[in-house]
Length: 122
Image (cartoon, rainbow, N blue to C red; front, side):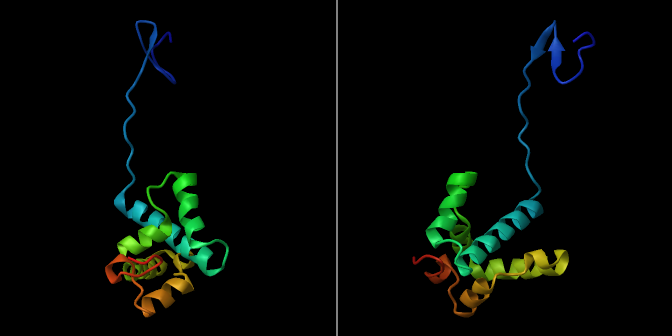
């Protein structure tokens, strides 16, 4: 407080409230995080860890996401998700290995909203 430096900013002996700056992650990072989350959600469904609705509801309620991972996958397109995960696997390793269910669904042309069928029917 004496030198007006430290954890807080001081002016005239009082703490100055700073407006929080909105931090944004670079698009490539948010894209990788979203695709990894979608892939893990699909893996949970494939391994019968959870039901479809539970996978989506858990992240909407628990993490405050606007949509669940399976809903995101249907919206983006399962073929696009598979393609990106394959790119990420080549670039960043096995942690981006696409879930087997994702591959099966793309092969069966269950591509999400654009095909009118994916994890949900449209």
